[in-house]
Every structure is written in C-alpha cells, then in structure tokens.
Length: 73
Image (cartoon, rainbow, N blue to C red; front, side, top):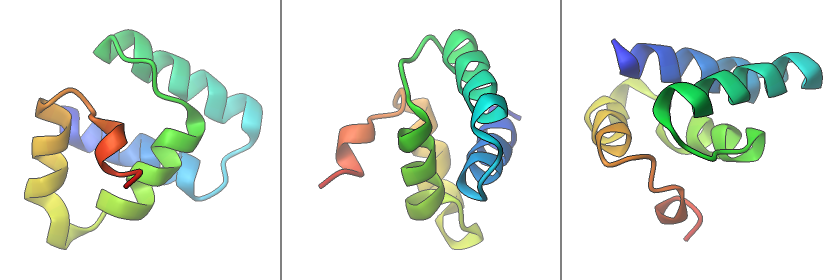
C-alpha cells in the first residue's frame, strides 16, 4: 500500500502539479515516512523508478528508507 501512495505522489509532482500543492504533498509524505525529501527528489524518483518494469526496485527503494543519493549517481 505504501508503494502505491508514494508512486501516486511522485507521479503527480513529476507531471507538474502546481508548486503550492506539490509542496503540501511533499510535506505530508515526509511527515508520514519521517524523511526529508524535496520536490526535486520526488521528481527524480518519478523519472527513475515509477515504471511497471521497476516495480520491485521501487518497492525495495521505499523499504530501504528512500536512499535518494543512489539515484543521483
């Protein structure tokens, strides 16, 4: 279930949601998962992991606590 929520939030932000709304969603996601991701981080997650073919990678990424530095390489 968590993966679906993150997937949908990343998709909305990645598709160009209005900045104020996007920031609100980022704040909620960070609060829920105890993370400090930015809108840019979620956009990067969307670009790199939000594909059906990467479903297991995405699930693993979330389980490992969103190691965003791995995607920045």
